[in-house]
Length: 255
Image 1 (cartoon, one colour):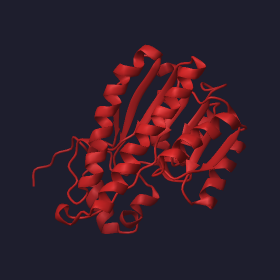
Image 2 (cartoon, one colour):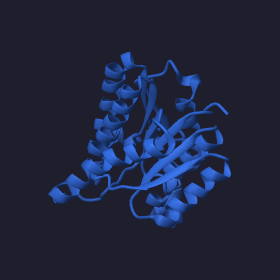
Image 3 (cartoon, rainbow, N blue to C red):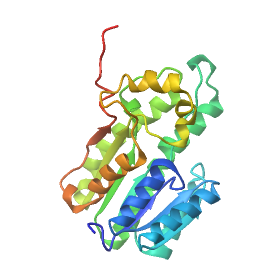
């Protein structure tokens, strides 16, 4: 129970990687609050899993495009569970479009959720810690596409590249406050965002053939790494990005 007595807040906790992290942190002893958009059934399932682990939970519906809602969700989590000491910025979206067809609305939505939402969630969290005079941990869920080009997803790549730099910058700025800031960069993970891939044996094989470990990752793979970064074992780790992709990023094959 490495996280006994801790409170965690996770953005986008109703399914996929966010739910996996919520369940794992609860098993490691943390009470867990999370936000979600409109997946009431998914949020209820996450709450049930957290409570089955014997921990307290709070599901907070909040729009990551709304700055006031972002600030209020952290305040609500504090009222219900106490001041969070762990923040996992997991909420994210992507939009496929050739670069020359990307609209302002596409750009604004992806950058607002993936970068602006993360930025101001972290700001609200840090201000809670400053008011309480406590240290804390920020874990940003980035992507291999902070480094790896992904044609057709220019907005997503731009947002994740920015997350990489923000992680490094905040590690330096917040270190004197006792706040660590790290990122996890997943590759292909079995989540709802990859439903099309998972339902196509041809597409799936083409991808797994490029992954040295020969399979897609699972939410629990990412959750295990998040649990380490949230724990005292990672107390001297900050400004780092951990790639969790089965070796995909650095795999090169002659054609």
